[in-house]
Image (cartoon, rainbow, N blue to C red; front, side, top):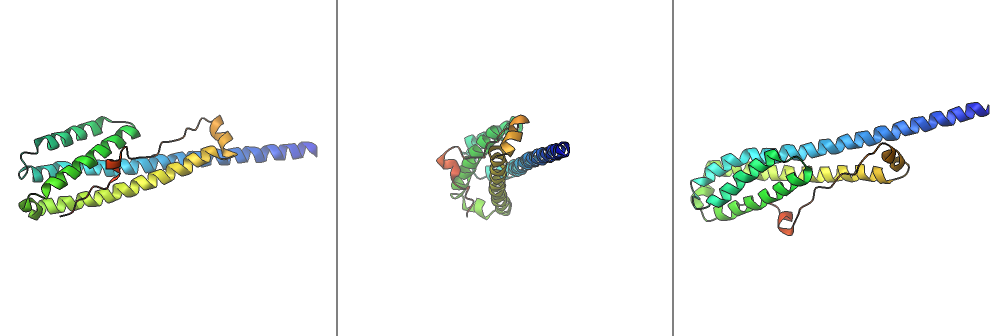
Length: 183
């Protein structure tokens, strides 16, 4: 009888460990998926930019350095691997897009251009999707990191070497502002 109770307790503990482990794995997969959603939206933005730049270039020939910066950011984006690198590039690009939008205000013909209007609308929509994806990622990371800290799943997380993930954050005050695409 005592042996039966001990076996039952061991079986219950094994089932609990398996359940907590699986829960941690599922949470980690959700974090990876949430990051990939940000990555998809940021890539979409980078894919839209060449068309946007070409449309704007004809009107803003003296803004060469801004276009070169965007080109360099796109190159850096494809080479970056970590979340922090991509977050930094995203913040830089947001600031550069703000510059283009501000300069575009001085070009009434550009603002009336159909391609420019459509592309700026696409960028605005993409910025909204990026914002939502960042929020979803941070919510998912927070839930995952919480599981790593609360008892008893923190014990299982420690045994199986689960690591906390970083939140997606803006690096400076300027980066915290939305990219404004208003005409």
